[in-house]
Length: 268
Image (tube, rainbow, N blue to C red; front, side, top):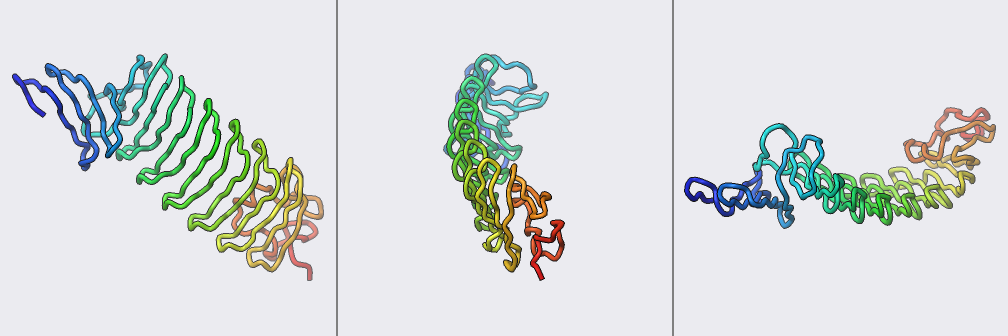
């Protein structure tokens, strides 16, 4: 930038430490900041720089950092926010401490609207989700930090509705299930990390049947499902439907009787 009569004037550029593509453009008039734009590659955010202390903020558009000292133009913002009547209204961006974007989306008078995105601290995309009047609506996709998909599903009026799929970190499909207004409905499939079948079920309103497969594939068994709980033939609960997703090997054909009648083990 330039000085005139010993005071800053015109356009000044402040670079973020360690970066050439992240910087602030400040315009000075008579030594006072007239406008501030923060740039990160092709993206930019224009607002008033403030030190935010969780106090009420007047209507306006802000680039905020936390702390008690002055705004540091050699560090990225922590938050970009547009405020109306003490509510977020418009684009809202948050940053990780290392300057990578953490999240971004739009608000309408404090309610999420449209597409929101989240990123890992490393810069990789973590999740995209669509919102309508502060409720999830439409497609949601999540990724592992290695870039492969973690999960993908659809929301309707804030509830899971339709197909939901999970994957293992190497890309192998882990689970596929259908939802109706937030509840499991219809067929569902599970797989072990090597791609072998883990389970298949037909469940509606928490009721149905599920067939489970042992890790080595040598033993299969069908069980009744009631209130999303899997029941042994002898009547006691083996485990819940959700545990089919979280348990690594199914506790069947493993040499240990988990059911009183040992129906989870091969008969001799």
